[in-house]
Amino acid sequence: MQTFLQLLIGGVLQGGIYALGAFGLSIIFGVLRVLNVAHGDFLMLGGMLTYWLYTSFGLPPYVALLVVFPVFFLGGLLVERVLIRPIAGMPHHEFLVASILITLGISLAIEDVTAFSLTQPVKGIDYLLPPLRFGGLVVSSLRLILLGIIVGLTVAIHVFLQRTFTGKALRALMEDREGALLVGIDTRTAATVAFGLGTALTATAGVFFVTLIPVDPHIGIPLTLKYLAIIVLGGVGHLPGALAGSLVLGLSESIVSFYVGAEWSLTVAFVILIAILLLRPRGLLG
Amino acid sequence: MGRALSLAGLAALAGFAALPWLTTSTYLVAFFLSVFIAAVLAQSYDWVGGHMGYLNLGHASFFGIGAYASGILLKGGQPLGLALAIGVALAMAFALAISYPFFRLRAAYFALATFGLVAFLELLASNLSRLTGGSEGLTIPTGYRLYHAYYAALGLLALLVAGTAALARSRFGLALVAIREDEEVAGAFGVNAYAVKCLALVASAGVAGLAGGLYCWYLTYIIPSTVFGLDVAIGPVVMAMLGGSGTVAGPLLGALVVDVLQEVLRLKTQYLALTIYGAILVLVGLFLPGGLAAPHRWRRLATLAGRLRA
Image 1 (cartoon, rainbow over the protein chains, first blue to last red):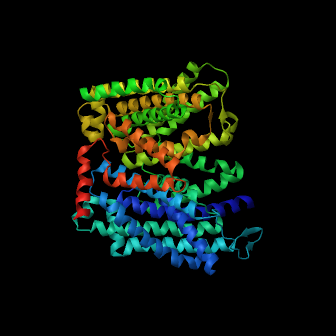
Image 2: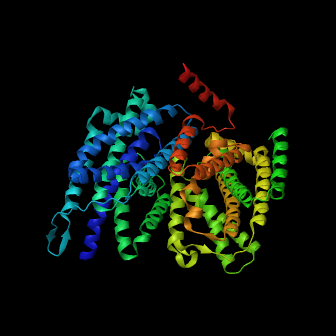
Image 3: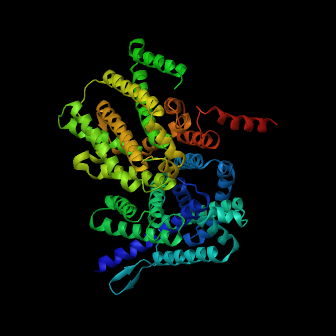
């Protein structure tokens, strides 16, 4: 029973980390209709930056957040402005194709340059705080802090999307593109903000990632695949769905790695994904 | 295909058929063999991805299933013909099985799900190591078969190109294009969209499965990433797009350009070859998504060049 509880806690935390990146991808896809293949690579870069801030300046990961978020927000703005906006006027099918080619190109370039410029490619932070004990249950206090920050960020995103003008514009675009255009929402600005926000969120997930699991330049595409699975699972452009999908993936990975073997965890995620597609093609909550 | 293009195709076929007699370089023969396999994949991908307009990022899954099924049978001492036939049958059966859930999805959702499919199969191939050899790889009895494989791949490609040209003019080809342009309208005009989509996917899977079996027989050794790797999954899509999706010549041109480019990058640049390849993908996406075979696309480049000069 206690093992199972431990697995549940580990799974929820992993799911929370997935959720941040999944929100990012969901917002990007929902607003821009871009299938961002480079999403996982921005997470990897976020982790690398955190590692560098930690080893060079001694910044603890939760402080590094304050640097990583704005840096990648600006980076995302720039990528959208330079590489995505020029294709925005293309017909539907061509746009899909072009967006995949472009983001795949970005992904390959990021992976290759990162691998090339690092002499020792695997980076992990051993940042340990004394664990908390509840009866026989051991919970890492670092993980608890991280979980707290993740919950806080999730709430912040929710408030941003529900209360602010820009947030409402993003939601409008995700729900009904033509309707949003009709009421005069500036789609260009919204697209740029959405890409910046999405990139910043996945880089933030990288901050948490590097404190728990070592990060190397090649994790990008496999992570993108997981994120894609999550947002299909949860329904694209649907944030509560992305959260549910992340928790399903985090929990199933945690439970399956323990009882069956770590090498099967991703396989199970895809089996669940295909089952959901069969039963509920619009996603878990869609 | 126009008459001039058909003639050019026949001339190219004759040239490639004579190639092993014209050169003693096995390197060149092996290189063109890999171009043929890539062209077969790009062309068969394009039935679904280009003509029908369903962006299938999982074409490599059929290639890999064909390769592994044939490979496992060849390892068990079965004759080549039987091994290839079963590889093709399994790839087609798999396509049939996934067509029901996957064709409930449209556009980007379909692309997403098929992208996941290849990763799923790669994991399966690594994990089912008793059957597939896992990450250690699957080795089949070897023999010198470069020239046999070369002609087999060339023959397969020639048949496929002729078939695609015929397809483009057939009712079935028209149905594919109608689905790409507007699936509801196609349905209203009496196209059984689900049946057409299913048939196109199964047929393209059969071709990819055959190419996979052949490739495995030629290489005599495969690991999961040989057939399910990201480059294999994305390759046909990039080739078709670069050359011109939805045309007969486009995917062939794309396969040639991409393979030559990758080979040159591999030989000439020590570092960052992948970065250059990535940059080229970005440029193609920005300026040539209709492909090299779509001349009106060049205008975008011309305008850009004009703007830069001004």
